[in-house]
Each structure stands twice: as C-alpha cells, then as structure tokens.
Image 1 (cartoon, helix red, strand yellow):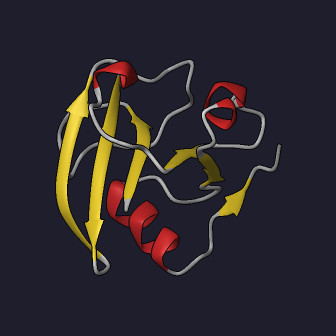
Image 2: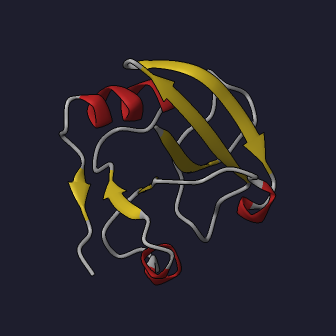
Length: 100
C-alpha cells in the first residue's frame, strides 16, 4: 500500500500536510501490515517511480482531477497534519474520499 502526501518539509517527523499549491515536497509512504516501512521525500511527484494508489490532501477544495484521471483514490485529512496522524487515520478508515 502506498500513499502520496503533499508536505511542507523533507523531515520525517516535522513534515506537515499542506495544500497542493503550497507543497514543497511529496512524502511517498509505503505501508506493510499497518506499519510505515518506507518514507521518501521528492521535490516533484513525477519523481516517484512506483504505483501510487492513494493521495491525501488537506481539504476537498483542492484541484485533484489530475490524480483522479490516473485512477488514484483521493482522500481528505480534515484535521490530521503529521504523517503519523494521516497514516493512523488512513488505517482506521477515518479519512474522507473525494469522489469523481
């Protein structure tokens, strides 16, 4: 399972979710059995050389059609900001999906 999250920093425990317009880095998170097994940061989302299943955004007003066109699931983290909070909410199915 892989998540892509727009963040403001490339430091694992300091990075916070940000809007797509203010994104400085993309956190690429690989999960295995509910645990983060890999967290890599990329300046551009195009630099991720893996299949991305899910993108997490800050709010439902984000311009997400590009992800939906690539058949990615787009989830909103309304109150979660850190990577760990977002992953926990994802695993508990408490993030909201933006439908096409």
